[in-house]
Amino acid sequence: MKKNTKIRKWILTFILLIIAAMMVFPIVFTLSNSFMTEKEISYSYPSENVIQQDNNAHKENYVHLKLIPDKFSFEQYSAFFEKKQEFFDKQRSYLDLYGNSIIMVFPIIMGQLIVASFAAYVFGKLKFKGRDTLFLVYMVTMLMPFQVTLVPNYIIADKLGILNSFSAIIFPGVFGAFGVFMLRQFVLTIPYSYIEAAKIDGAGHFNIFIKIILPLIRPGIAALIVLLFADYWNMVEQPLIFLDDPSKFPLSLYLSRITEEARGIGFAASVLYMAPMLILFGISKKYLIKGIQVSGEKD
Image: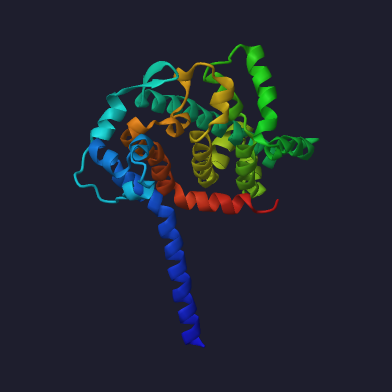
């Protein structure tokens, strides 16, 4: 019996390793190819025009997937930081687009952390009439498909005169409902006796929030940062809807538009684009797991 259990564990481990390898392969492949020279990339992955010139050729006869470059080179990364490309009739570097992503994402994360943490304390620990009903109405916006709120947000941005600016994307993101829901779950795990003791000592709501609530929900804040970054770092619809000037678009819109002549830069751009997410996930992995666990608990 023990022998059969051990065999099943080995089989399960082997299957999980295969699945993990399949998930990691695209990352390793992209990373290794980003260090190839443009000449090697052109040889390994020729353009459709080159293949079509040979009527008897098949694409699989030309494409050679490689994990180890013949010669390690940083020329693709150098081109990423220096080379100008034609983006929608405007000369822009990939670094400029990368900067646009940072300008939009970080204010959203910081703003939503502030709003969500205060709102979580109000909905989680303060008692007032209609609190639960108001929270339920607020959560309905989280259940709606993102596309449903695009038109109202567009109209509001137009009335405020912030269309075609980063603010049109930042403000709706700051007041997202997901952060409130997630941090409220953490606030609910804090015993109310802590707050009562602070009130007896003469502490007001602001001091209670700063000195008691925030330190105790730090794991939730760390997990929320990771989730928000993953969501808004890869956004596509918002820039397309709210921005008319292509020079303000984030890099996420251009990774799929990289031409055959810039495939090498595409590998380097992909590595640099996913690097912050991988680093952030590695640092905050334990907080992310705990955050997901707490968010799934019932009130």
